[in-house]
Length: 475
Image (tube, rainbow, N blue to C red; front, side):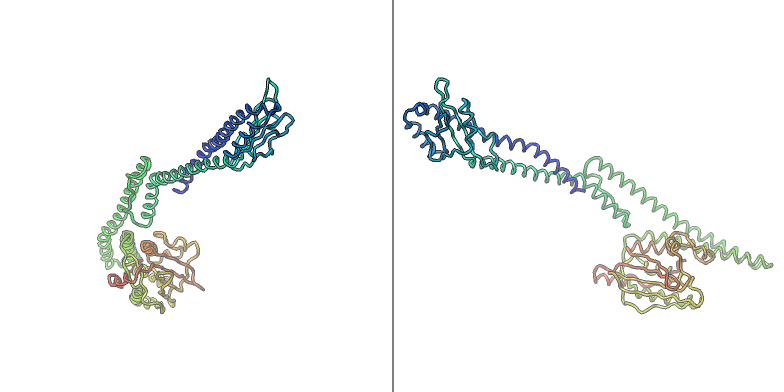
């Protein structure tokens, strides 16, 4: 944007310079030509006053010596021509070329000169002719032919001076335009940078509101106010979810105990069935509250990063989920892969993401199914995949899978709160990673995670700060 603004300033400056310097250059060329023409007319008039005796038949000695001296001193050819266009007296450098028109005018009784202006590319000489009269009768003319070279050089020097002045003006305009554009656009540039920082998770980034024009200062102040309001709203929302989940846990526990105590008093079959369903609903509600609390905590993890060995974490999670997989007759295994495989993530991101993906894979694979976890170093980072042999998802379902509380139509009666993949997406995004899901072949689902690697090898020593941890089930 700064380049476009400077180019617009520069284009305007160039147009102004062209509009001003073009007529000035023409005026300078015409002025230099007019100065030379005036000198030559004065010289020709003096020679005409001396050429009268020669044209009346007298001796040519006075005018001849004058023309010879003039030629030697100024290197300019001159001649005295009679009315029949015959050359009576001429200097050594006299050349009668391009003098016909001037002679016609001079022999008619008027002074003549050509051309009007000498340009740097002009080659024709400056011709001046003055009539010689006696009692009103034109006896002949004095013609002076001045080479155009010195005039061309003088005009070219003036034009070069104009070009240098214009170049200096353009350079000054460019420097001024860069300074002005920088002053005007600095708030916009900072606003763009801060917007990207906020989009990447740094909600504390703000714009300096004391830079640039007053209008942009007000814009920066308004942006900061908007960012403060949005940040406050998000903090309040997350705090409400966390507090509500936490505060509802105790009443829910008490409610479940009361419902559970009603069991012995129920004797008929329908009552016992309804009692069992009520207990299941309280358990389901407890899972929802736990998932909401986990999601609120995950969304607060924004700036802190730790280095973890993803291969060790994956082995720990497979071992932790092994008993549940065996209970459901599902084969859960960790495929051979790269170890160690260091990743830079927010705390517990790899643990919780694998917990959610393995939980879903074991849950939907069914008896006799297989769940395979792989870890590999790939694309300057660490890639983890959880592959199951369950029914998988359709294309439209894959696009909705990370929405909060979304459940597939054929999974409405399966345990869970519909927040597991949402939490995975939040943790992966906070870690600058990627979450991908695609259909397996011939069936099943492949959920992939990618986390960036540490920037330097010494970051690996931070791996000790992130233990593999115990199983943390996320519904």
